[in-house]
Amino acid sequence: MDCPGMKISHEAIYQYLYDKKTGDSEDLIKLLRRGHKKRKAKGVNRKQRKTKIPNRVSIEERPAAIEMRNRFGHWEGDSMVSRKSTEALNTLVERKSRFVFITRLQRKTAEETTAAVIERLGSLPEKARQTLTLDNGTENAAHEKITEAIATKCYFARPYASWQRGTNENANGLIRWYLPKGTDFGKITDEELTRIESLINNRPRKCLGYKTPLEVASSFGVALNG
Image (cartoon, rainbow, N blue to C red; front, side, top):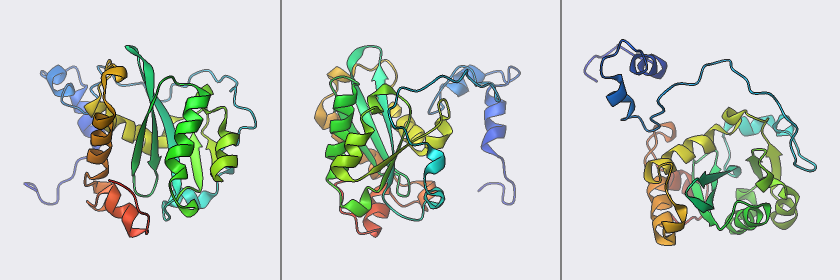
């Protein structure tokens, strides 16, 4: 705004922050939403390993139109854990609206994860829960039960390809703003989780034209509690 016509990319900003020549880089890095002390080297791949997901359907088989984000009803799912708690969180994010569901799990098991997904997505009209893209964690091994219960087709990203579920990864980053790593999820009340969920769903987003996820979801005729 102060320099009309001039632009700078986010990559240039990150490179400046993490450059050793930047005198106050450590203090600046702490101000980032995800203040990692180091950046991961690009092009470094982890060794692939076989997944333990029965009848896994790869993301390559997911309809290409879903990438366009033109329609409501396509979700991404993940789990959040803490070293200080046996409890975990299940997160679900709708790709078009970025609407978020956060559900507490007593343990990160396939049984509890499946129950949480069925409960949260099952409360929506069928057109609003068409697909769900997951990672290859064993907590997602019972994906067929989800499809059987609520007719939501499940797909799986490639191992170590978190960018294929980038919407969910970004949402988890927003949640970490309220619940930093090291938080004992067992000490977080259900009311607090509901409050965090509401704050995120009522937060204007640049990628949504500064509308909120709740507003975008509502524009598709989907009734959700913000």
